[in-house]
Image (tube, rainbow, N blue to C red; front, side, top):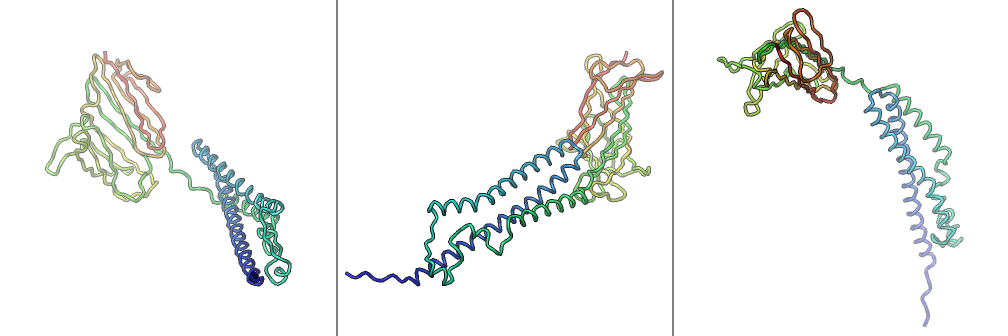
Length: 336
C-alpha cells in the first residue's frame, strides 16, 4: 500500500507561520516587560525623592515602606528579564524546545536562526547596555523632578486656646479663640460645632433657640449662630455663619464667649471637670487655662502647669493632637 507523499512546502509554510507568531508574541512580551521596568523605575525614584523630603515620622515610615516595595518589584522584573533568554537557551540546548526547520526552508525566507534567544534580542531591538542607560537616565530625571516639584506643604497647625473661670458652683465662664484650617473638601461659609446639652442653659426665642453666648471673627464682627437640639436631645448643634467663604486648608478665626450653666459636677466635697475637644484639624495645639478661687486645690488630675497669685489659682492643660484625635482630660478641685 502506497503512502501519500508529504507536502513539504505546506509543512514549511506552517512552520514559518508558527515561528513568526511565536517570535512576535515574545517580542511583544519583552517590550511590555521593559515598559513595566521603566514605569517602576520612575515610581521608585519619585517615591525615594519624596521620602528624603519627609519630616513627619509617620510619613517618613510610609514612604520608606512604599519605596522598599517598588525596589522589590524592580528586582523581580529585572531578574526575570535577565533569566528569560538564558532559560530559553538552556531549553534549546537540552532539546526540550525544538523547532526543526530545514536549512532549505530557512533560506527560502522562514526567518533567521532557530534560536529563541534571538527572539528577545533581535538585531533591531536595543541591547541590554542601551536599556540600562535608559533606565539610569529615567531614574535621574525622576529624582530631579520630584526634588524640583516637592509636594505641597501640609496645612498649618490649628491653635485652640480656652480660658475658663471656675468657682464654688457648677457654672463657668468660657472665653476661647479658635484658629484652625478648614478641613472640608469644598469652600464653605458655615462652621458647625457641638456641645453637650447638659452643660448649657439655652433659652427659646420667637425664632428658635438662642445661642447662650457670643461669637466674633478676627475683625471683631459678631457672627450669627443657629442653634439646634440634636442627638435625641443630648447635644446642641451650633451653625456659625461666616461673612465670607473660606477655602479648603484656609485658616479661620472664631472668638467665643460662652456661659456654661452646668460645667462642673459635684462629687463628694469636690467639683469634677471633664473636657473633650476636637476640631478635626490635621494638627491642633490645645491650650486650656482654668482659673479657680485662690483657696482652691486640685485633688485629682495633674495639670501640665499650676500656679497662683493673690487673687486666684490657675491650672494649665495643653496637648498636640493629629488627624482629628480629640483632646480629653479631667480633674477635680476642692474649694476650702
